[in-house]
Image 1 (spheres, rainbow, N blue to C red):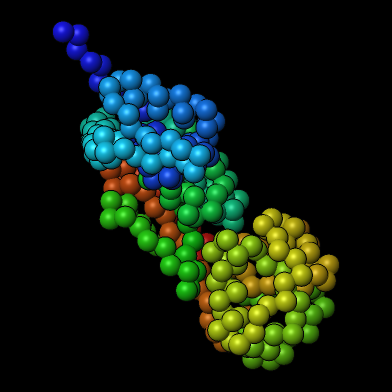
Image 2 (cartoon, one colour; image 1 turned 30 degrees about the vertical axis):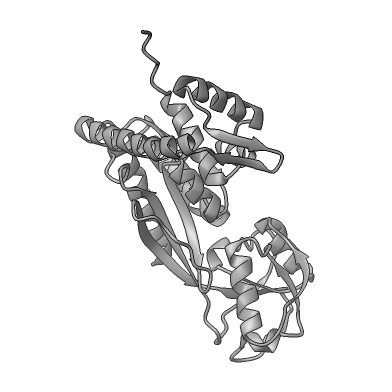
Length: 305
């Protein structure tokens, strides 16, 4: 009797991502490959397992009973391999290889560029790759093994859940500030409610900052009159400078060298942004990951001081 080959680990990881996303297209988008490639690899995995793993229909895909069992074991296998890799790295102490980081835009420019430059000198065998994505996406990529570190931000009234096998560390916090055209007249002891008749330039509601600002305005009894919805921070600052409206933003995300703007504190309500680093618990003590995290923490600590 011919012994069946063991399922390939990369295909197990892929099946786990299909289960998490609920579709082949969703898994393909997260993993950066095509839907057809995902489908082909799942077909290979089904041949290796000798059973059907997915129910395919015009409405999408779902796990069969066998698929659910294999996904449960796949996740355990992937975590075991991650723990094994971390322990081997700790024993070797090697500071070489690639560290993959997902970051919010404002921190990629102000923190990760100088961190990369510093590490090129202090640990030249470490290679950083950076993917600028929203926090929800970077956490997804961290969970499926596509990233080693995520830098995310959390805003008041926009919660985010973290599985208990992720290690989080808050590295700084900052209150949002009012950003206006240079000649905009701001009343003393400014309150958010004073701005109910203003035109606004905001980031999209799908992002955490956009959600937090809209929530705060609604909580003060008004809907912001959004004239521009802008996902590009450089364009956002320039559009404000040229009179398209006002905004609330974290100070670290404002590049006033792009175009002149006014930056003003306001009294009520105080809206906070917290910045966190996140990594899998199995990776937190890997020397190469720890070296990068330490440098990020050091730089963010200096920025917050």
